[in-house]
Image (cartoon, rainbow, N blue to C red; front, side):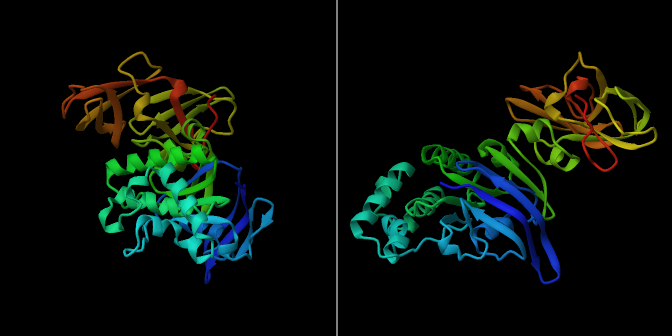
Length: 361
C-alpha cells in the first residue's frame, strides 16, 4: 500500500475555481474520510486523485511516484462508486474477476483472487448468483470485491453507502472498517455523513466550498475544532451557538454578554479579543447537566424527541431558537416546560467575529 499526497491542488471548470490550492498528506495504511456539505468539492478532489479529473494546478503523488499526468489506469488505484455498476448478465464471480480477465490474467489466478476476496467479504455462497438476486448490501460488497482483486495501492470510495437503507449502512460501515483492518490498506472515503466519518476514519478532512477547513483525527476535530464551521459540522446533534458581545477581556478571562443580556465569564489562555467584539459561544448538546455546572441557562422546550436510550429537548435558549440538549434515558420533560441547564466552563467553546476558535484551555 502507498501514501497519497496532494500539493497545492487546484481545479477549475472554465473560469470557475472549485478546488482552491489544497495540500494534504495521507500516510500509508490510513483510512481518511473526506467530509463536508454537498458541493464542497470532496468528490472532485477524490476524482483528481483517481485521475478522472485533471488538475488545473498542483501535483498528486502516490507513494514515490508523481502521478499528476498519469492515466487513471496506471495509478494503482481501485475505486468504488455510489452506483454498484455490476454487469447484470454475469455472476458475482464473473463480475469480480472481469477486470483481471480483460487484462489477460490466467483463469487460475483470477479464480484464486476472486476466492480470496469472497472469503474476506463473506461472499462465498453467492459466487454463482446474478446481481438481480442480491440485496443492496450484497451488491456493494461485490463492487468492493471487484476492487480488492486488483490488489491496488490505494482504495477510493465515493459515497458507496448512499443507496442503502439505514440498517444496511451500519452493516456496510462495519464491513468496510473490518476490511481496512484486514488489508491494512490505504483508503480514502467520501461521504456527506459526519457520523460515517467519525466512526470509520483514522483522519477526517473537512471541506467547505473547495477549501480545506481542518484535518485531524475524529476526536481532535470533535474536541478542538479550529473554527465554527468544523465545530457545527462534527457532532450529532450539532453544536449549539449563542451570539454575544465581549464585555470584558484580559489575558486570562473574558466576559460575554449574550443576546438576552445574560453575562457569562470564561477563562482564556491568552487572547487578542477586545471589548465590544462580536463573539459566539458554542455548547454541545451532550455536555449540559441538570445542575452543578459553572454556567446556567434556561431552555423553553417546544419539541421533545424520545429515543429510549436518550432524549433530545429542543427549544429557545437565550433568545436563540433550535437550541438542543441531550438527556439520558426516557426523560419526562414536556413541551412548554422551562428547563434549567448547566455546563462546565471547560466544556464551552468560544469563537471570534471571524468564526475562529479562541483557546480556552
